Image (tube, rainbow, N blue to C red):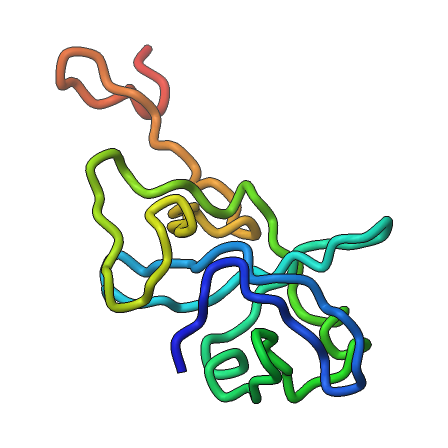
Length: 136
């Protein structure tokens, strides 16, 4: 089932969950890998949702009804804007999904956060190796 940009989303326990805000596009796989749902409200936040969860959801009029509860929705990974970027200038959104170009985000390639930087080798001057030991 196609997912519309801005579609209203509810949970199976009847809570208004928010709306579909973005589609996360994998440029290497050329497909949508995740969606962002903004939950709005005073304590609202944006969550990352799998395509399977949205595409398999029931429809109730113009709303998407997820198969999870409001509590389960709150436990999903939070969307962090620094992990995503807008598509490059000139990129055309695939028409098959029905999202406008501005509705897509691309993941930002980052080095793993928990890996320590590698130790650097001693520098060389004009191709000579650094001196080792005493030269008396």
